[in-house]
Length: 468
Image 1 (tube, one colour):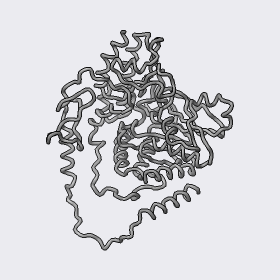
Image 2: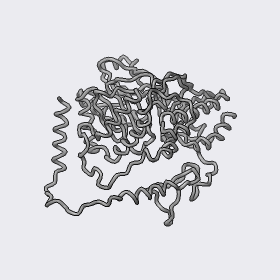
Image 3: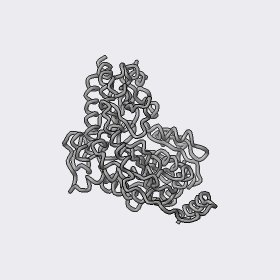
Image 4: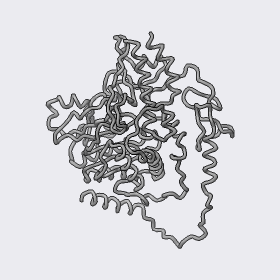
């Protein structure tokens, strides 16, 4: 009931802001549309996509010409009009979780993932959208279909909210929890933890919520007994990709599950989660980080209403265009798998799965290969400790599989290597340092989500460092 009342009052306020005193004088005539209106745009998109750029760049619809000529946008460590030249002594950037490894997949599945939108597409703030959830009906249907197909989270019966990426959703959840209970909360996460949790809390926190540090230390402090707290649980964890359970429990603890990586290409699907608060992001499903779509599943209608109010107050909703693109991408993801009669075993090379339109098989093949490659390199030296993961049975694939994490977690063993980050940086490899995740700088995180060319650049530096 509270969900309906809060959203009704809120939407009435939005209407009062949006209503214009100008009334239409009458219907316009002569609005017939050229039946081939998309033809020129489609031709232009295909023309730009045909640029090869030596396999190390691309030309896109919004690529800015240089001196009136179309010039390729080059990937890292490549340059020249057609990206054919390697940049000497280029820094290998293996730091960010930017999932550009999926570019190859979508070039093989261009038709399935392409969306053509007319310039009058959903110009309204609200038409075609459930303002109570911020989600278009089409996207909501695809998200629920995806979860049911994968089996990673129980979506039926829960309220689904959409946001511009999962980051603002996480912040809105913190704000809503503190507002709902009218209490001051400590936000915690077990180290190593995703740095955004701490950064958002420090930047936006007020007298309602503040960063409480490592969840394990927070729980051990007798002074925190009975205090209201919210714990972020990333499953599997970023940066080390371990799977773990919440540290806190009891009526004063609210657990926020971040399932950004709990998908079949990065993690074994071991069970279907049915938690109070669960968040997800499109970026780690399809690779489209720039589309900025995240979503959450909520059991409590009153909490969902407050979260949505925070989201809409901040941005007046999520882009229709972004939601339309996400809908088409998820439709492309699910369409192939929904035709199967049961799990399709994982056994073929990544390129074959890309041709078949099986993104979870493709992603797993790429990540498993990269993880094994790194593991073998570090096995040749006792200077570093490489965190190993065990094979697990995955219900989605119907078989036991080798690990395929999105990140590798490495520790520098030597006494003189206290600053592991700078050790690798001086060797030509940019990584993320351990202190960003609440642990010592003897730790570094390798991203496995970049392009193949990034790892080709890194290989010579890494082999030299490991051999030293």
